Length: 123
Image 1 (cartoon, one colour):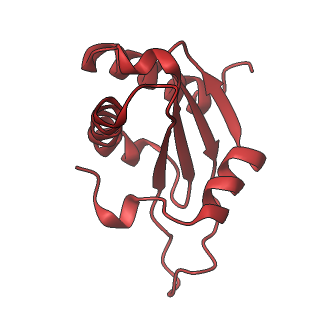
Image 2 (image 1 turned 90 degrees about the vertical axis):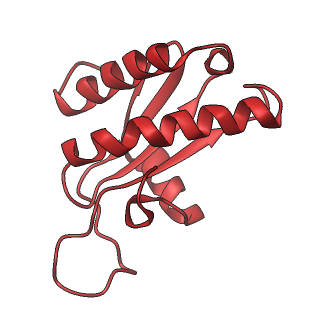
Image 3 (image 1 turned 60 degrees about the horizontal axis):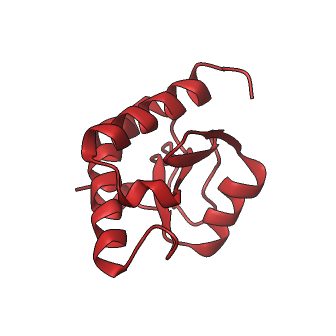
């Protein structure tokens, strides 16, 4: 599971990542990244951790399917959160096909989107 300090929870943080960040789309998901954003709510002078949030709408499926997709995405991001610059805001938005996808397919799409964002690939 994704540790609490790496979870994106505030509505304004989601909005910042989606509106001001870069994005990379794949068939099953879209990843929005706001690199090195500073968190005005975080005390102290150390670099804030990378935080990730997930958007899984009813278009993906029923409640059971949506929760399963969220759990899979949180587990996948746990291992990938260290690849992002400190203070980054990451929003992973699941597309309707994600409900029918297995773990390996979600992992491939997430890896491809993250590599495109961090590798500086063309938009």
